[in-house]
Length: 96
Image (cartoon, rainbow, N blue to C red; front, side, top):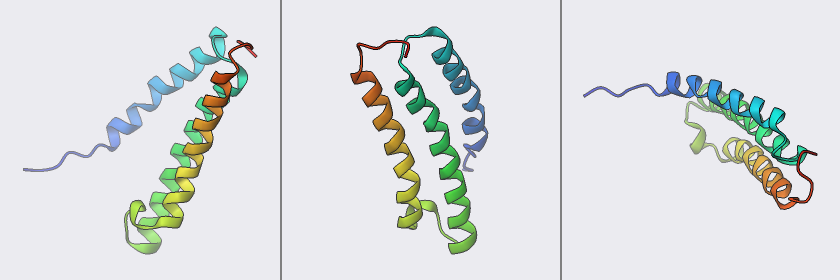
């Protein structure tokens, strides 16, 4: 039984997320810090893709096997999540 390549699905998921970011920027429901956190999630995705390519080409291994690269990529996810939470905790300032 062959395996299915999930890459096209991941690529297609970019469009709904970009639409989400667009709506997030136009509806004023969240403050600027929360919106920035959601936008930085795209940076995490980009850094993870680059780190995965480096791990494969340079070390002939998957990203999860190269701790410095994997940890560095995950740091961007931590940053984006921290900004989302920090923004959500500032509920007194919607739309800023």
